[in-house]
Image (cartoon, rainbow, N blue to C red; front, side):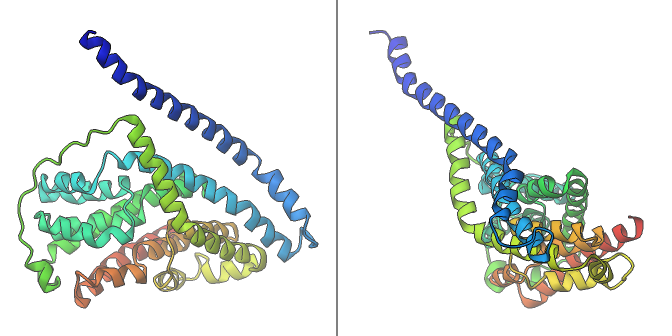
Length: 354
């Protein structure tokens, strides 16, 4: 038996495995497309089963909730799968190696860009933060990544695009990226390393070489995407439902005149108030975007709404509690002040020009 024959026999199971995954993925996409196309008739039919007037406050709230829950979960599953596949090319080790190998002035936008491309959640922030600092990556560059990751990650952008349109998603991307890069630069210029926790400052810094290339084929990457869907959607679906429930209450019961008075562009205090309200909230992009959809639908100013969304995601109280493991209270306060200033500037700017 020749060597070529043996090699061909070994490749056969891999080809069969690949075709099975392609066929399964194709069927899943067809099913996804059919389910998405039937959301409106399905939601209207389901609402009609309830003994409520469709035009009433409760009827409007029910329609919003029944339509948005499957819509957001379908979008979330698709986006998480795609970003999971993308993440197979950007492991934390490889990301750290890329950042460590660039000059500091280029590090801020590069770190923000990698934060946008790599869907690391806030629960990953502490080990990534420690890993970056131990690799000799400047503190300001590390902050740029830390801000961009949760605030302008691909999952949030994808949901924002699907629910409120590409214009708002693009605006959010540009300003979120800018806040991450500029805030990181400002924090880096302030030389705040002395405000790290003592044990973090004592970490030995060193160079990081090229991260080893993982030998993953297309099936391995598709499996990673499927695993991400099970893991992430399984963890966040409850926050999605809670966020949509809040959005449904706003949509059904809050009059437009009231919303304009509270979150309209004419009220100068609406932007700082939105930031103050957003910080203590515990949710993620998937949970807050349905609320954003409802606020915009009721006439809330775009700048105020974006400031609210950014504060919820980038300055959430739970993430600050997690970061307390590596940052002193003074550094956390400085971090919040710099990022909040960027968010406030974004809100005021958009309320002034739109």
